[in-house]
Length: 576
Image 1 (cartoon, one colour):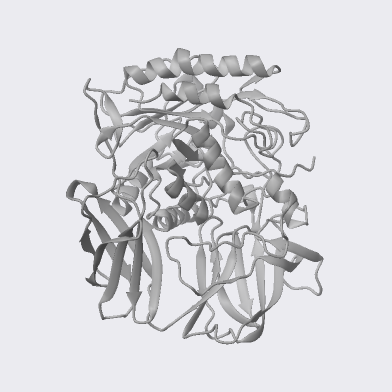
Image 2 (spheres, helix red, strand yellow):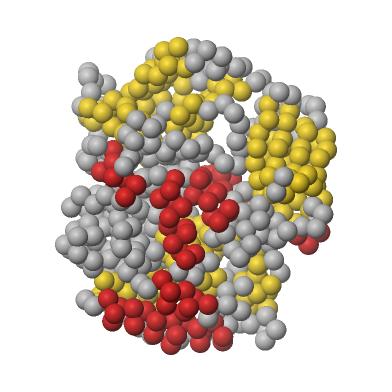
C-alpha cells in the first residue's frame, strides 16, 4: 500500500532536500540540481523521448520519485535536465557532485562526456570545467544496476524480496546532485584526527599543487582557540586548550575555517576517543574518552516508506535520531547502508554514536551458510570463497575499493565509533586480512570483522546475534563482547504497514503485552549481562521496513509502538 511519511506528504517536488549536502567541507558556491528531471527506462541508453518526469534524488522504485517502477538488470535508466547557471557562478574549476548513484552511471554535460562512476553508496565528483557554461546547460545521466544478480555491494536489495529481511531494490540517483565552482587554488579536503590524550588535533589540508601556507582558525562557540598559518598537504597539530570532550551527553563540536588564496571552507571536528580496555572489575569494555562506556543501540536500516533509501527531508533524518535519544539509546548501528552526509552531521551535533556497517556483496547467498549452520554452532574458515559466494576476484577487489571509499568519506564523522566489516556471513571473505586493511586506513576506531556468525578469533571485538532463544552472557577472555543484534519483537499497527504479509522474530497482537515483553527482555537478560561484562547491545530495530514489523516506530514514522517514558527508564539502567 502507499505509505507516506508526514515529510513526504508535504514534499516540494521542485526543491527537495535543498540543504547543503556536505557539512564538513562547506563553501559559498552551491547550485542544487534536485527536482524534476526527465527520465526514460529502456533496453539501451539510446532512445528518443522520455517516459515522464522523476523527482531527483528519489529512486524510481519509491513513491516520492513519482515513477514507481523497478529498474531491471537488463534495462538502462536515463535522466535528463536543462538548467540555467547565473552570471558569475563559473570560476576556474567547476565540479558536478553526486551524493550517490546506484550502481553504474555515465554522465554527459552539453553533449560532452564528463565521466562516470561505479558503486552505489558513496559520493563522487566530476570535473566539468571543459563542458559547463553560463546560461543554459543540459545534463544527461545513464544508469544500470544489476541488483542482486551481480556481485557488487548492494545491501539488502533483492529483486524478489518477498517477506523477510530482504527489501525492494532501488536504483539510480538517490542522493543530492549539485554543482560548485572554485578558484584554481582551492581546498580539496580536510582531515581531522583528535588526540585527547595530548589535548590536540591532527589536521591535514589537501590542496593539490598549492605550495603556500593555509590560514586555519578553530573556534568553540565563537571563541577562537587556535589561529595560525598552517602547512598544506602534510599533517600538523593544533593544540586545543581546555579541551571539551564530545559524547552523547555533551556533543561539543569545534568549528574550523581554512583559507588558501581566495578559497575559504568551513568544517568541524569533535574531541573524542574510542578504544577498548578493562573496567575496575577486569572486564573488557568498549571505552569512550578513556572511560568504560556501555553502547546501548538500535539497529537502523535507514529505509523510508515513501523515499526508500532517500530520507524525505532533513527533518525526517533529525526525527529518527532525536526519537532514539528520547527513548534513551545512545547509539545507532547503521545497518548495511551509508547515509547522506547530513545524517552523520546531525548525529555529531545531537550526540548519537554510530556503528557503521560496510555494504555486503558477493554472489547468491547459500541459505545453509547464513541461516542454518550458525545456529548449530558450526564455524567456517572464510578464506573458502565458494562457501561464501565470493569466488569472483574482481568482486572482492571492488569490495576493498568500496570499503576504502566509505572510510575516507566518513573518516571525519565524529559520531562513528566502530566499523562493521561483514554481517552474518553475507559475502564474507578473508576477514582477518580485511580487518588489517581497515586498521591501516583508520586506527582510531573499533573494528567488528564479523557481526553475528563465523568469528575468525582475535581482532577488536567479539560480536554475536541472538534471536528466538534467551541470551546468556558468556565472557570472552581476550576481547569486549557485543550483542550486536537481538530482540526483533514485533507488532503490527493497522493502516501503518507496507503489506499485509508480515515478518518478525516474535509477533505480538496486544500493545501492552508487547511493551511488557520488551521490558522483561531488557531487565531479565540485558541489564544482568551488562553487569557481568557485556560491552554493548543493539536491539532490532528502530523502524519497521516493508514486511518487517519489528520496529519501535512504524515504517511511516507516524506511530511509536513503545512507551517512551518506560523505555527511557529501562535505558537508564544500561549505564556503567
